Length: 218
Image (cartoon, rainbow, N blue to C red; front, top):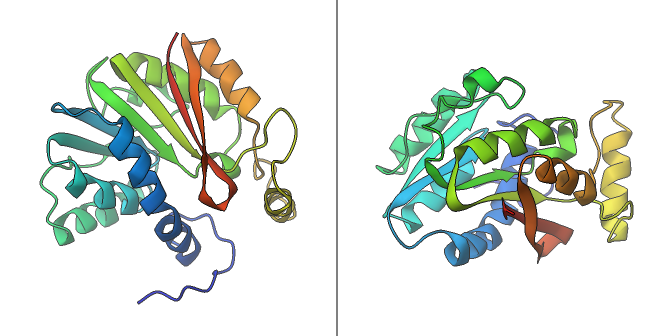
């Protein structure tokens, strides 16, 4: 069993730190998805699936939905497949190569407008805000009518930290010396969304001072 102690910061998708963070947030996220995901059969895409821990945790709770993992790093695909087999999840597709900076990969996971929901978990604190434009444009191409994009993680709001702990987390990330590490601002995601026909529909407060941001068509 994994220790409950917080491991050293390490954003690699297969690290102990990412596993620790994922185990901490998966139950609250499942609660949001149970409220928001469609009750009829459909397709759900995860962006930046990483180890596959989240999609394999969620999928058994929605047997009527077909889940599609994706990542720009094909080195994680074997781990995603292994988890899918270990959990006996038959409603998860093979992982697809999808790089938000490369539009040529955006339809590897499915056809245009074929997803009822897209979700992305804990990516922006270690990714450049510039990928927000690609994410919103990709989502606008892939979401079906009435579909939504859910982005989960810690964020600044209108240039301010909502808690002291989020400010400390930002400072810890920034101290690593990697230019793109740090808490991004919800305002920048909203701006990127508006450029591609989407808007922020809901901003849901989550445990550990995180947010679930739900975007949909204007």
